[in-house]
Image 1: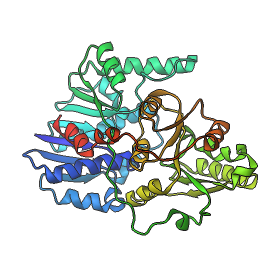
Image 2: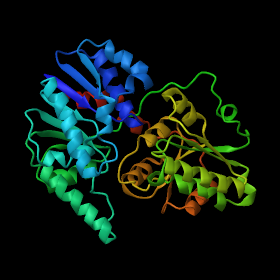
Image 3: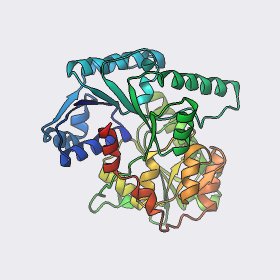
Image 4: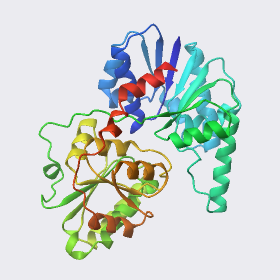
Length: 385
């Protein structure tokens, strides 16, 4: 068998998932051939993963050309689905593969309504429609557009398996609703990361040791509740403000959002005594692990709480509680496993209230939550399709 894994994004879980697959293949040799089609800068930004891949005899590592990546920029969702599918298809034909695993299937949903390749397809679906709100006309239109898209691609006989992260309820609904067996629950893996030696979060960011550090990490922006996190400083009682540091770690998608964030940070810093620090970069896995280990709690007031989040897994692995949105799958996971505090809606005021009105003392969190989210199991499920 020749199997191709395709993911040309280079942030967050995208690189983590590829790393899990490479680690698994390194210690589980078989007769198959594996092709990884990835971002042009992957080997530069993640040389350790690249080096491991090069040491595996039956793995071929291919970084797409910068020109190919540029064809996917500044185009609409519909056009992007077809352009990216055709890009993937060129590599699948080039290597004459039997199966393609799309590690971010969302982009390919529309294209899969029309194309019937010679190879089979599997993938991971994020942000499915089942848990989406239907309160407004706009929300209803979006819900049913995704509903019928899903219904139609389930009719594609070449789609063998679509994995949904952490969500048994959605899997059951989709299989029953569309009379299929292609959907399967896949536990979102929690990597076993090692922290940096001699790293001290207070020294590194020059933070007062009396301050409680609330970490907001990942790809930052409006849908992550980042602006409300920054503005929450303005709603904290004056006597509590000096006790709190909001640590933002991660990048934004464009210069416009960066300018807005800097403006909001300046306003909140000027009008409160809360210490707001923005480390505007994607940090190494070791440093990220250190940040989770040494912070007080983790802020994840996401506006699209329908899906799971790798940040939740990292927080649990570090035995840190989270502040998150009371909705969707995140609500169920946090409530069922006592993983943190849920806010009724994403506003600066509700976040501020959660920061000071709740105890974030660590306790022995559910070990089962971590045990079933083993990266080796995750990789084996994707590879076995």
